[in-house]
Each structure stands twice: as C-alpha cells, then as structure tokens.
Image 1 (cartoon, one colour):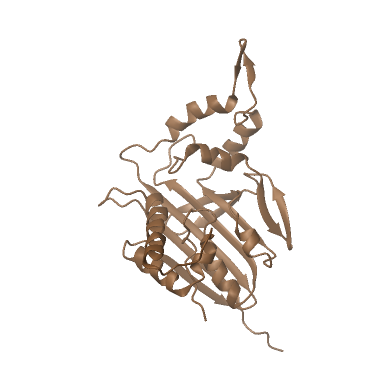
Image 2 (cartoon, helix red, strand yellow):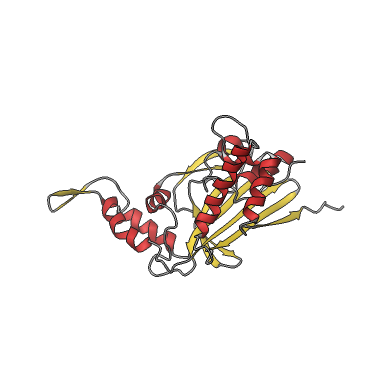
Length: 269
C-alpha cells in the first residue's frame, strides 16, 4: 500500500496539498477534498491585516481570477473572495477562509472526486475589504480618465498597496494549512503550522516552498524521480521513494505536518 504524503508537499505552493490527496485517492476513492492555506504575518497590522510573503501582484490576481472548483461531480466557476467563513486554526486563532483558484492540475488528475475546493486563509476582515476594493474598480486594468490622462486603476492601487504590504526587516511570517480528505473509510486531516526561522532569518513561505523545490531537485539529480516531461506535484508524490526523500529533507529542516484520522464507525442494528 502506498504511503500518504503530506498536504503541503508541493513544488509550486499551488495547488497545495496535492500529494496527500493523490495517495489517499489511490487507496480508497475520495468523496471530498478541501484545502485551506495561507501565508500571513505573525502580527497583523491595521488596516489590511496582511503582508505579502510572495508576489503582491499575484495576490491581487488571486482576488480577481475566477475560481475553478468541483461541486456535486461537476466543474463549476465561482467568484474569487466568495463564501467567506470563519475558521479556527490551532496555534494561530480565528481566521477567515474564502474561495480562490488554487486547485489547478488536481481537477484534471483527479476527475472522479465529486467535491474539490481550495480556499485561502487571512485574518478576519481582509476578504471583505478586498471585495470593496474590487467592487470600486481599484483592481481593474481598464484605463479611466483622470484630468485628461488615462490611468490604470490597478497600477495606482498597486503603487499604493505594495509598500504597505512589504515585510519589514523585523516582521515574521507563518504558514498555516489544513487539508481535509474524506472517503468511505472516514476523514483524514492534515495540519501544517510553520514559522519564521529566527536562527537563519528564513521566512516560513521560503521554507515551505524553497526547501520542497530543493528536495525535488535532489530526487531528479539522484535519479529517484525519472518521469519525463511536465509532472504536477501529485504525480511526483505518488512514488514512495520520492515521498520518503522529500519527507526526510523537510523533517531535517523542522517543517512538519500533523496527520489525524477519524474512521467511520460501522452502523449497528
């Protein structure tokens, strides 16, 4: 039986948690896949409660791009920043989750799973503020006339937002993720909480993504992963030797995940 790989083991961060779902799906077909994930400052500051630990332009893209997910066995499109709900994450506290377009290759590699969604985590209030920005047109790329000059609202918004979202030298970040997988046997939950490494001065986002990229590169150099062409993360993680190699690499750097299982109890007459 193939072992399950951790939900955060992904070369490109999105789609997060791909490998765990692929392993479980091979062992017992999944009926539901949900990934909640966010990179956040440890100390949220008003008014945004957020600072970008990766490309700020891609953050705004996340807030505007249509969301592709699966409901009732059908691929559907929803609005970004929709379905906001409160979520309590151990070690972090109350956050909010909302729809974003992060499933990507999973919709193709796992077509049999009837329910699939990826949602972004932020501190409470951030999503509604971004919805207001979007509704006002501040994320639009269509030029508007300002005193006889054509101006892109997004360009102005970016020029104002990005300096406010920039991490200061003393700022620390965290990465929080939860994947919930369901099948006929029960529910499997994976939780990741990783923090800024003060000893090396390495941000958690860099640890969660960069170390994974390094590990996969080593697998290729060692000849452990030999598949030709483009391989989504879930395909890499389906191989036991690759799983073990990446797990060992990340554990050595104290990037850890907690797995919890809740089996369905057989019904009694």
